[in-house]
Figure 1 (cartoon, rainbow, N blue to C red):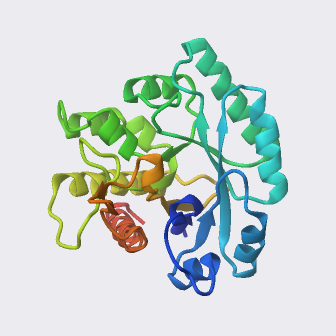
Figure 2: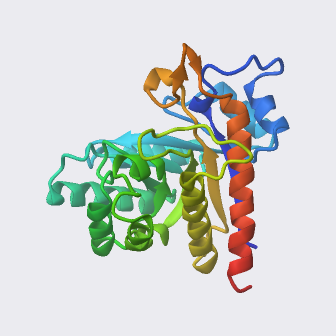
Length: 275
C-alpha cells in the first residue's frame, strides 16, 4: 500500500536542543520515520540513524551537468534513498537548463537513485511558468515540492491562488518529496498555531493534499511512498523570523505540528482517491 513517510531535516536541528540522548535518538523518539541529511554528509549520524531503523536520504546542489553523475553515484554508493537537488542558479538559458535537466535524469537512471529537483528560489525551478514549460519538455522530471519558495517568492495569492494552483498541476503530479514549511506572502517561514485559521495555512493544506492525491493516483512502480521532511531553518540563513532577538517559535514543536498536518492531509487524500 502506498504510504507517507515523515522525516526531519538535519539542518533544521541547528540551534535546537539540548538533546540529552543525542539528535538521532530524539528524532526516533518523536516518531519520525527518517532523516534527510545535508551536504557534507554526517556519516556518524548516518550510521546511528540506520542502527535506529530510520530511513536516510540526502540533499545536494548541482551547478554543471558533469557534476550530476558523481553526486548521484556517491549517494547511491552510500545507500541513500534519494537526493533533493538545488539545480542551477536560475540564470541559465533554456538550452543550458535543458542540459542540466538531461544530466540529472541520466544520472538518476544510471545510478538507480531518485533525484528530486526542488521548487526553490535561486535555482532553475524558481519560477512557476518556466518550471511548467520544462515539465512539458521533460515529463520524466520528479520534484521536491518546497512550495513556500513559490508561495512567497512568486506571491501565489496575488492574481488568485486557485488559478495558480491549477496552472502548476503538472508539477504537483510529479511531486514525490515535500519540504515541510509554511510561509505567507511576505515571509518564507512563519509560525502556525493549533487554532490558526489563516488563509496561508489553508493554502498549504491544499497544496500538500493535492500532491498526496496525485501520488496516490499515479504511484511509481518501484516506489510506494512519498516523503514529507520538515525543514524549518534557523535565522542565520534568513528563514526563521526573530522578534526582540528571539526566534518567533519553537522550531522543534512547530516541526511536530507540521508533521501532524501532513499526516492529516494524507488521510484526506486517501479518502478522496478511489481504492
